[in-house]
Amino acid sequence: MSDVPPEPTGDRPLPYRIAVLCYLFDADGRVLLLHRRKPPNADLYSPVGGKLDQSIGESPTQCAVREVAEETQLHITPADLHLTGIVSESGYEDQCHWLMFLYELTRPVRVEREHFDEGRLEWHPPQAIDALPIPETDRRVIWPL
Image (cartoon, rainbow, N blue to C red; front, side):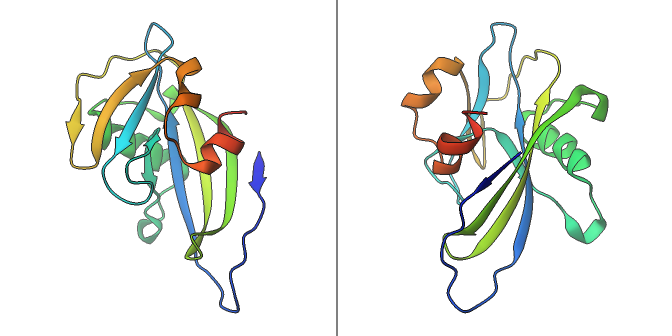
């Protein structure tokens, strides 16, 4: 579990947003990353995932199952997931705070989908991640974990 040092937020309170990031690996040990087309993190690489639907009381695990299905078209169950960490990020772009639940899929998968409205899915060997444009929190906190 890790915290990113807070950034100045000025005199106004900021909302908290909750999200999940899901790490999927193939039989060769490569990690699936989304080359994002939309904010947040447009033009950067990140794991599949998304925002928790708080209005319906969605749990982080339910959110992970839903996001994996939406983005990869894989149907998984909560038993396929392992919670590997929780990261908080304060004052992101001076607009909000993030609480991110990090999950790993416990079995290798094949994903046939390549493109969808949020970007392009690509497989990368873990040792190549440092050379990719990734969010700063991923670089400083998540990948070192």
